[in-house]
Amino acid sequence: MSGINYMTQEGYDKLLKQLDDLKINERRKISLAIAEAREKGDLSENAEYHAAKDAQGMLEMKISELDKMLANARVIDESIIDTSAVSVLTNVKIKNVKNGFTVTYKLVSESETNIKEKKISVNSPIGKGLLGKKVGDIAEIQTPAGLMEFEILEISI
Image (cartoon, rainbow, N blue to C red; front, side, top):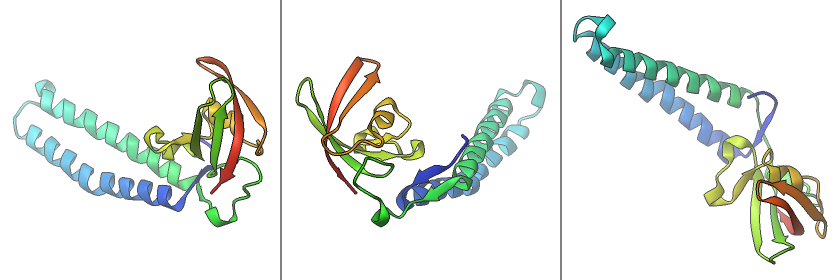
């Protein structure tokens, strides 16, 4: 992941906690699994040992990714966000022009994306299509389902 990763303080703290857990608890678990596997004899044909070493490699890769994400993170103070146009960390209420369905999304960084919480990435097709739009604008967005039109109804924090 390259570039700046804008996020909320909550999102930053969550990633930091996840990173600490991986470094402290998960490393310890994998270290114990490797030690147990070593005790079982010949390492060249020890499937448990190789599986534990693979898990260790995957864990270190995940730790490295989180380290990079946090190093490039910029925590945005939500109290100073301009709500005159859609931007990162704003809530935007949109209406599908074709069927009238309305929904409110919060535009967040990729690391904070959670569709169940209606948090979508600013890098997603819908997120990119909404950025910079103002209340009353119609956003034409190319989605996998085809071209869709959304009217911007409300922008808030």
